Each structure stands twice: as structure tokens, then as C-alpha cells.
Amino acid sequence: MGALKIFLVFLVVRLLSVFLVTTFFVPDEYWQSLEVAHKLVFGYGFMTWEWASRIRSYLYPLVFAGFYKVLALLGYDTVELLVIGPRILQALLTAYSDYRFYVWTGKKKWSLFLLLTSYFWFYAGSRTLINTLEASLTTIALSMFPWHSERTDFLWLTAICCYIRPTAALTWLPLCIIHLKNSEHSAIELILKRYIPIGLLAGGLCIGVDSYIYGLFTVPPAQFFLYNIYENIGSFYGVHEWYWYLAVGLPTLLGISTLPFLFAVINTILNWNAFPIRKALLISILFTLAGLSFIEHKEHRFLLIILPMCLYICSDYLSRWSTRANSLLVWLFAAAIIAGNAAPGWYFSTVHQKGTLEVMKPLAKIAESYRDKDNNPARLLFLMPCHSTPFYSHIHQNITMYFVECDPHNDKDYQIFNNDPERWLRMKVPAMPLSRVPSHVVLYNTLVPRVRTFLSRYRKIERIHHTDYPVSNTGTYIHTYEINLEEEYERQFVEDPVASSPSHSGHDEL
Ligand SMILES: *[C@@H]1O[C@H](CO)[C@@H](O)[C@H](O)[C@H]1NC(C)=O
Image (tube, rainbow, N blue to C red; front, side, top):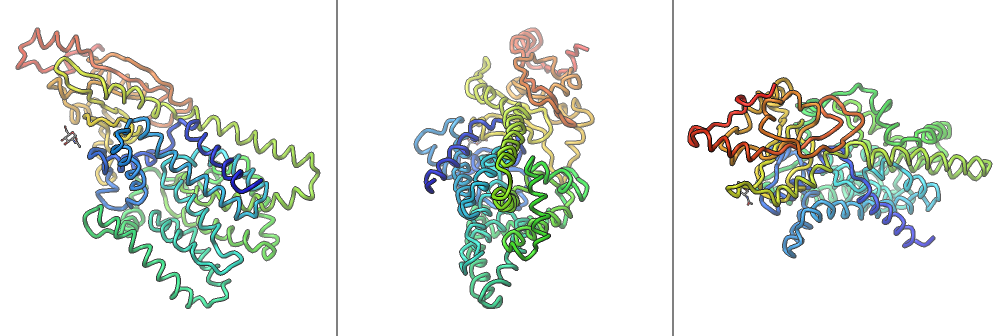
């Protein structure tokens, strides 16, 4: 097939994923990219503590901010386009990186096949997640890496990767050492003439952009290192055992391809000097896994960066295997790969954790059109663990929205919410005047019995399925409640309007 056709195949699959993947993965997909872009362009949006601590780079949100700005200038800044547009942008980049992967792997059928069928890449490839960007940029950089030549332009992308995501250095350090070792030029010469100038230029440009937007000199990777490694802030968000990536993370990332990957790894180790590229990639993968395993806070998405390398090793191994193997066996194996990816691909992309995304659509409508008797717009309360849903980027109305914050530097509020949600409500959410009381409350079914008193002023208007496997403080369903305006007005009428304090404790239905 021609190059363009192959690219179009990737493009179609990634664009399909924009529309088919309707589930929530992690908060950062929205809070560290779209939310920031929304704030930059429209003036409102929530900036998490990461931005106050200046540990994140604006480079990625800036791409979406540029897109938002164009939409705003054209007058097309509808919430639908704000939500879907950035995903299409990332899907374009992912499709391009897929194409580069295909070229890099020597246009092997297996590389095309493994990449297209990878359920995890389908699930994550069109998300506005820094790890998706990191994986696509790394793939493009790998395709430029001087496996057989002397080019050094991959260093630009490598530098940017490490700048936006300092942990990418775990992946790139071994590869750079291999590059220095294998090159015809001396390492000193390369470092002085290429590594340092490119690093300084790329880093300088990035620092310039970030410092401009932050309004003061800022080196986000340095801040990141300070916070995440030195203060170990990440462990606030959960801690896993050291072997989690090997036992859970990697098998989840690769799915059914874990099996051929293991064979490929064994085959690579047994023929250590026969496959130099596989060897280099394996070293980088192991170094990345080891490095990440030292950090207490672990997530599936942190492994996205090694996905292309794992698939390279797999496809190279399978290409050699399939020329020798029985063709029936090869077809059976390919069918197993398809089936093994289709099942989790369908489930994770369309079923598991879809409620927190789906609920935003009716909420955006409410935000746009709801008005009470005094023409006050809606006030939304997300009575859920922090960052359970997207925020202003999916609402696009400057209305009041309350949510449970969790700042790792001060998690007292969050503990109060967990232990005694009614107390959190009394502390954080106004019970009067009516114009400030939340008009709508969004919460998991599991929390409903714990806030009965508070909810006595509300009635349920919607129930959305979220997941069959709720974890700790989530739930199977998401409920939306709306305040009983008629009752509120009646009460205001009956009681002295000045003294009327519709304290919810007075209306306890228990
Ligand atoms: C958004 O609303 C808040 C509160 O009403 C107001 O202070 C702020 O200026 C508004 N921002 C924009 C950009 O309209």
C-alpha cells in the first residue's frame, strides 16, 4: 500500500476513536490541558495547584488555546467544538506518529497490525493527555533516531519531550547513551556540537514561552522535580508496590500482546547481539520501568511512552516468526490478537467510567438555559471526589461551580468530605441566600444516603450509569439533583423574607 493510504488508515482509526471513546480515563485529560486553555482564552477555568506551583509547562495547553482562540474569533466557540476539537487535534498527531512508527519498523505488516489493534492506544490515542502527547512525540523521535545514519534532529523532539514530561528522560537517557556510543563521531564532539546547543536552544525557547505566560522566570521541569521527587507529593494520589508495573501496569498496557512481547523479550535476550535495535529498545524499556517503579505513585498512563517500543520489539519478532510458522497458526494467532483487543477495547472505550463524561452534556445545557425567578443562572455542585468530571471546558458558561478540592499540601477539606460530607457542605456551600445555593447537585449514588439532609431541598432529575466496577468512593450511577424552586419560594413567602434562612437542617426527611 502507498504511504498516503497507510496514513489515511491510521487517520480513520484515530478519528473513529475520537467519537467512539466516550469514557473517562484520568482527570489530567481535562484539568491539565483543556481547562488551562479555557482559562487562557476565555478568562475563566480552574487552575489546579500544579499551575500555582508552576510545575507544568503551558506548551501543550497552548495548542488548544490557539484552537479555542480561533473558534472564539470566528464565533464558533460552542461547547461541542471545544470538547471534540482538541481531541481531533491530538488524533491527527497520533495518526502521524502511527505512520512514522510504521515507516520506522520497516513497513512491516505486523507493526501496522499491532498498532491498529492495540486496544490501549485506541483508548488513549485521541485523549488530550500529556502522556498521549509524550508517546506520540517519542514515536516520531524514535523514527528519526540514527539507528543506521548519523542524523541528530531527533534531539529536538527528545528535548521537548523531557521538558514537558521530565520522566521521559528515563526513556531517552539510555537511548542517547547508545547513540553516543555507536556514532562515528566522538561522544565529546556530539555532546558539544549537538546535545548542548540543541538542549539549550529547545530548552531556552520552552522556558521563554512558559516564563512569558506565567509572568515570571519559570523552569517547570525543575519545579516538577522539586515537588514530585523531593517532596513526594504524588504519593498523595495513591501508592503501589514496586512490582506494580510488571505485575499490573505492563500487562494492562499490552493486553493480549503481553504474551508475544514476553517471547520477543526472551528471544532478544537469547540473541543479545543479533538485534541491535531491539536490544537498545529493551534497555530503554527496562530502564524506564525500573525508574518509574521507584516512584511510589504509579499509573497506567505513565507507561504509554514505552508502548511503541514494546510494539516494535513484538512486531519485529513476529515478522521473523510468521515467515517460518505454519500459516494456519499465524492466522489463528492474528485472530486471537484481534479478539483479545476488541473485548477490552470496546469495554473500556464505551462502557467503563462513562458517566462522569456523559453527565457533562445535560449540565452544559442547564448552564446555558436554566434561570430561576430572579433570572439567576445555575450554580452547579459536584459532590464527588475531586476532579471526578471535566470542568469549565465542558460547560463553557461562566457560572458558579462548587467542587470538592484536594490540594496535596492541605487535604483537610478532603478528609472532612470523606468522613462527614454534611459537615463539608456546611463549611463550603452556602445554604442561603437562594441565589448562591447550588441549583444542581451531581453525585454518585453511594453518597446519596450520606447527605439526605442536604438533599431534602432537591429532587432527582437524572440518573446515569457510570461503571459496573466502582472503586472506593465512586458509584455505579451518577445522580443529578435540582433544587425545588417552588418549595423555596413558598418558604420565602411564608417566612419573613429577611430572616428566612432555608437552613437544610430544618427539613430533614429522615
Ligand atoms: C466570571 O464570573 C465571575 C463571578 O461572577 C467574575 O468575577 C469574572 O469576572 C467572570 N469572568 C469572565 C471572564 O467573565
